[in-house]
Amino acid sequence: MKPRMLTKYESVVRPALFKSRGYTNLHQVPTITKIVLHMGVSASMEKSAVDDAMRDMRMITGRKPVLDRSRKSIANFKLREGQIIGCHVTLRREVMYEFLDRLTSAALPRIRDFRGISPRSFDGRGNYSLGISDQTVFPEIELDKVTRQQGMDITIVTTAKTNEEALDLLKLMGMPFAEK
Image (cartoon, rainbow, N blue to C red; front, side, top):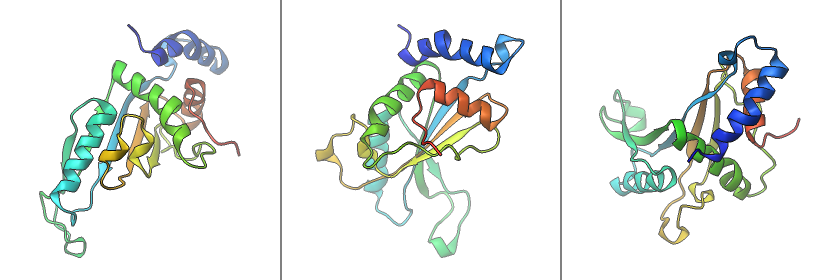
């Protein structure tokens, strides 16, 4: 069965973008390629912090996270080469659309004093990044088992050439952007 967001993209978003942007070919319409979630953990924290981050990431995405290690030593940060500094998960295809649906309909509205996400967090090439300061906004996380608050970065990678194309795509997909 197709995810709800994928069906919405194929039936509503793609035709609307094709018509409004005046594309000549259906393959010119931007799509979402992947979603990358990253949780950074301070290198000075104990090993259980990494285990907690991995467990929460697995609960949120349903996929096993990959450990991120430092590439070089930095003495001022008490960081050694090869030390674990976080974990990340890359979501593609159906799983990506399911996560995007849960993010827009369940997680973002649970943020305290939420007034929309910033429309200025594009990177210039059509990719959007947002940070969440607390992992407990996701309904999959059990509040009783959370030992420390952990933030995460979410990057939505699109095939859009400009920020305006990507903004139109994400607005039509249902991302709650704040009004200027």
